[in-house]
Length: 528
Ligand code: 1PR
Image (cartoon, rainbow, N blue to C red; front, side):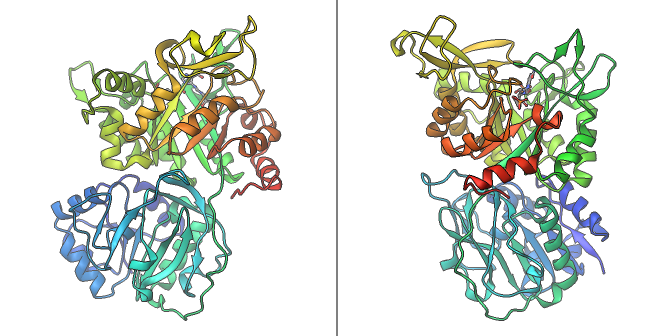
């Protein structure tokens, strides 16, 4: 049996290759329309925006072979946007026709109630029994999308499972040997690998009884993220380091808290919902010369089946031969190596300053370029704010908040100033103007650090998190300062943060990820 993988240049296809490999199956690459029609089984990954996926399929002449295959009921598994393109169209790309196998249109999640995109772990409710869900016991699976398939527009005989976010949506479709998941099985840990294995074993019989269980709604979990700040030490070895308020040297040496691949693997096995790598000296050199980061991703993605984010040095660049690279080129190299999301720091500040000066979206900033091709959900903005104390709200034009910790001279208010280059340079820009503009430019998530809290173990900067969460509708990852499980409980019970990220306490084995999850769950907050 040949399993053929349809790689048409969409985002992170490496993970699906690795997942298929992990299941002991081998696969071939689709290089022609004939391969699409003739393969025994076809895996159709989908990352990026609806319009772009259809454009790429069209350029390669794959639309008719795909339709032919699906209409003939030959085995096919679509993932994420590949489920969406089975429909006639999408709000995401007005005027672009989908494959039209299913009637109806993909819709955008309504703004307001919940962060959009949905990024995180949610359950599925099988609405028919199917061998695809053999052994599935309600485990949460990884979703990342702003658009959804409406149950009312999907034919009953195609609906396999629903999920609830701000509204119920179709999270799995299937008929005959054709199936598609809105979630990413290849990024959903062992539960996802099991579903993938079910498909590969049982694909001939996605036939169903009409046993329905629509009673229990699903909900998205708060994510616990482990972050690895990575850089070369003075001996040239890539190490995980950790700063105190971003100072990573101790007695002149770069602190070394371990090897990145081994540590990331440990966090995956201990239940981290995502892993983030920040190349903290990426602003100094050109990241595509920095092969160790590419190798690191490639190595990690072989054994880690949860989302990987990478940041550091994502920007336009001219190398010393005069050759230009766009931020999109850099991001694409990371996606190809196994990243699911990229995180932009300093360059996002430059982009926002330019946008606020001109009021014009040029489409050329790193945020816009990457978002247009890979989708907003692939673009994280890592912001490094620090407190600026003031006596009263009138003392500055920036958005102030009541300071949780009074200033050195008893100041009761502060605003949060954006910095670049790992906090080395401050800009006349507050974090609220910044995050709002990032969302307008197409960012999909905010990784909200706080230099004052970083490495202090004193808890998250709740006032900052509340301020930012109230200003944007995209998900916010709270970072910096976690020192105990109680800090995560406080984070999720006192703010609306979508995820909590920590570094030092996990690296030093002071608190286990599982302990964090148990404490958060005991406080009534949903976790995976
Ligand atoms: O500006 O696009 O090249 O990206 C550089 C990236 O590197 C940014 O995301 C920036 O946050 C990060 N960075 C730069 N310098 C440092 C440093 O520490 N000297 N690390 C740095 C930032 C912040 C966290 C940290 C949390 C949790 N690290 O992500 O992991 O504060 O720590 P804790 O739990 O121990 O308190 P660009």
